[in-house]
Image 1 (cartoon, rainbow, N blue to C red):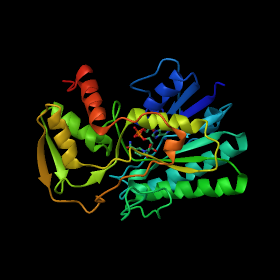
Image 2: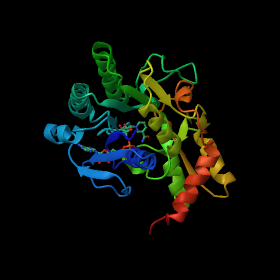
Image 3: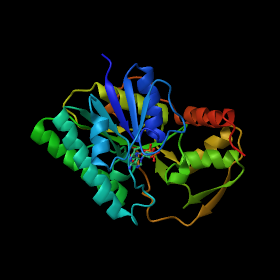
Image 4: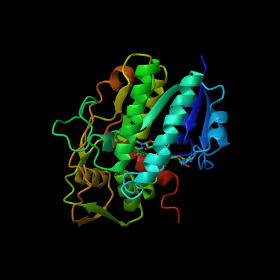
Amino acid sequence: MTKKVLVIGGSGFIGTNLIKKLVKEGEAVTSFDLHHSEYPVEGATYISGDFFDDENLERALEGMDAVYHCLSTVNPGNSNKRFMQGYSRDFVQSVHLFDLCIQKGIKVIFLSSGGTIYGVQKNQPIREDAECKPINHYGSVKLCIESVMRTFNTQTHSNMLIARISNPYGPGQDFHKGVGFVDAAVKKTLSHEPIEIWGDGTVVRDYIYIDDVVEMLYALLDYDGDQEVFNLSSNEGVSLNQVINSLKALGYTPQVTYKESRSVDVPAVVLDNEKIRTVYTGPLTSFDDGLEKYTNYLRINGWPND
Ligand SMILES: NC(=O)c1ccc[n+]([C@@H]2O[C@H](COP(=O)([O-])OP(=O)(O)OC[C@H]3O[C@@H](n4cnc5c(N)ncnc54)[C@H](O)[C@@H]3O)[C@@H](O)[C@H]2O)c1
């Protein structure tokens, strides 16, 4: 049956790609965002509004079956300076959103951060039951929000879901927003600009192609089991140097400048995806295939755009 789905932050990187998938699956989709979409999806309804305006938010939720919460006003790069914004605004308004959704019987899927919430972990790939030790306030705000969701779930028997996404990349991403090494590496290579790597390039991340992320998020829409938190990841560790080597293998000539390592970089984050793979059983894109798809996409769409 068609579901009425609200995507909060629907003009953003993940929101845009998610809306494409939801529309393709025949869901009735509304995007709620402060800004107009650069890539509007035919068949979706777009409403402009401010998440922090209670009236705007309540109106947007009217009649919805489900909500994807795809919005954060802080990122890993700026959250240590802007941490009060994260706690006083993102956190508080997310609690308000959950309360409204419980009152209205709306399912919630919250986009959390698998890349920052776990911090330094000895055991890799990291399972959802690992103790979370975020090393920045962005991850800590996400953990606070998750904690409230769990309390609501326990108290009210709501089944709000937490999607801890690793490191997505693909069409619609913009590394200038503060995250996205693959996006930066690909775009700088195509523009013949040097790529900066802090440290010796051995830092390992779990990169996941955006199409796989949205498949997993979509699979959670119908999930009604008793699990509340899922890693959305590739389960595959790729070092920064491997990203560079994969670009070379595709025939490009990336230029790299190595800089002193940063204390903010956790050496390795690879997320176990066994749980989500019981919910989304379709194929996953290998890193090399995803990188090729993305570089081709950018070239076809005229990158660099000057
Ligand atoms: N991109 C990643 O690498 C990544 C990884 C893990 C988790 N996440 C999480 O996924 C979610 C989406 O990430 P993204 O990369 O698509 O972010 P994004 O910055 O591309 O999109 C966020 C959207 O929220 C909108 N927005 C901001 N303030 C608003 C407000 N007050 N009212 C209404 N809309 C507002 C913005 O206009 C933007 O379109 C975020 O919660 C993020 O923390 C992202």
